[in-house]
Image (cartoon, rainbow, N blue to C red; front, side, top):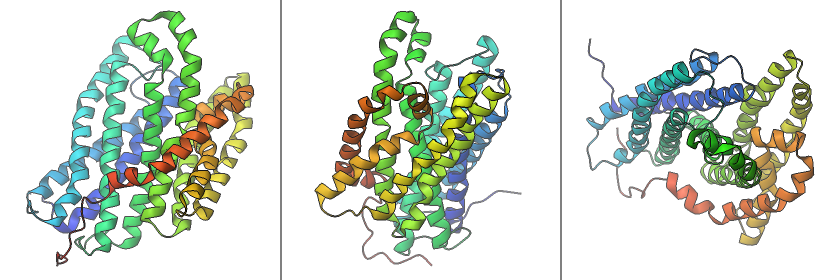
Amino acid sequence: MRLTVQRQDLAAVYALGVLAAFLQVAGGFWDIASHIVRTPETFFTPQHDVLYTGIAMGLAASGAGLMLRRRIAANSPERALLRGLGIAWIGGGVQIVAGPFDFWWHSAYGFDPHLLTPAHTLLISGIFTVVFGMTLGAVRLLEAHRQGLVPSGWFSSTKWITAMVIVALATFWMAMDGLLYLVFDAEGYAYTFHLGSGFTAAAQGPMFLVATSLLAAPGTFVLFTAKRAIPDRAVVAFIPLLVVLVGAFANVGFRASVLMARGAPYGSALADFVPLYVAFVVPVLLFVFLARDGALSVTIAGAALVGPFVSYVDGFYSSVLWTDLVRDVPLVLVPMMLVGAAAALGRRRFASLLSLPSPPVGTAAPS
């Protein structure tokens, strides 16, 4: 029996791909949290099961995209809807190499507590590429659906495609945060490049402050893009809620439960932080419902005010900031606000990265 993919399967392929991207990031965050609390280190863990299930699903979705290319003419408006699957296929190729490499690395070196190692860097790069591809495809699919250019089929209704965009944008927010974790992993640089404890002591503080400030950008970009793509603010609100849900269970809550079970005092500190962490989403929701993309000065002011709270919902850096470094909160407040304001200035350019290249004016909707 030969497996075939038809034009009307396009939305279903993206539904699979977006779910795959979400599992990769949620599993990845859970795995990072597991590394932080130093759980027994093997390749075969529940976190890796979730992560690699997502990778397998992503490869299936992007592979189906390659099959669809044969059925859609090169000059068809639908061809732009396949770009995201093509990008995800590249990320999947990176993951095909990264998976066995990660297995070998764990087998050879055992405990690997850092992000910036060869195996993890390759894996995270692949995850980010897949997430970007699926987010690009989902946003373009919604735009094309409104123009009547999405073939009817499974998951091709407005509600389903909107749900895909919500999950995709929340996942993209977390993936961009994850990229910042990788780039600013001071201990990872010292471990991988043998820079010594002196480098860590000198670089860790500044890198932490810079990363904490920059974490105000991804979510702000995403929220502006979502409000532009989806008129219903109540629907857009699910994006930050999903981010906080993953952070509360796969990150902060997980670390708190593991450490408390060991009797570690920091576990109680993390448990006490969870209600505050969840509360950080309230100002973000107010921004979703109240902020309007009107006068530039008002838009910038709103983004500056929400910037710190967007950063706080990351869960990794904010848990350190609000448990061990509370005295430094005022130090990063202004930089966070400046980053949020900068994101407001770049909001349209960011949104255009995910949009259809040009409206196919005069193109008849496919039957």
